[in-house]
Image 1 (spheres, rainbow, N blue to C red):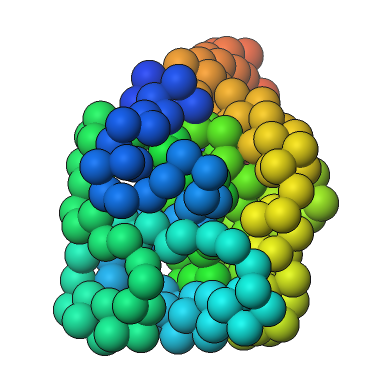
Image 2: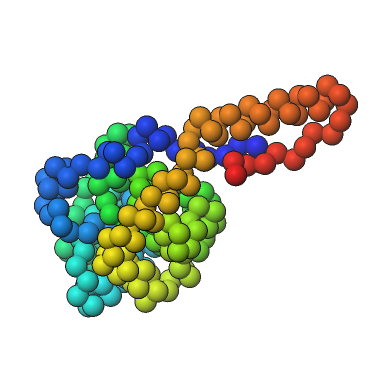
Length: 218
């Protein structure tokens, strides 16, 4: 199709990281925050998320879970992850701050067609650990700006999380790579691509040619 999804890089960028906000939630500066962003409903893979976090705890991997979002499964999730920090629903610039203040995004969901949350995390400079699914597959390059894991593969998710928890340089490198990739999805770029495509179709029509197949943002 002609239209591509985009990200507001004025709101989602690494410059919004706020250590003071993290501290206000009880997260220490030296703690690695594993983030979840989205509606708290079971179809988002909350069971997979919590099972993988259990593995980290069993392995003695130091981390802190930061959950941003609300929904009917919140009580279940809070009981399941008693050590996690629940920041509730955040929107706009508050959401930009919350995402940038994480150290990685863990997105085990297989239900999203386009990974808005994944793209926003990339723009904020976070590595993304995600399930191999439509939304994330088009954004995460495995081993470059994060990891793509077979849906429901708890051990593999835990391995990827442990890797990024214990290797700050890898975390930074993958975060920077994601930020770079996200530049292609800034709204200015997306809108320009849309305009260019329309102009190309109009020119084709004017000359009696067949309009080209529209290409999404590269």
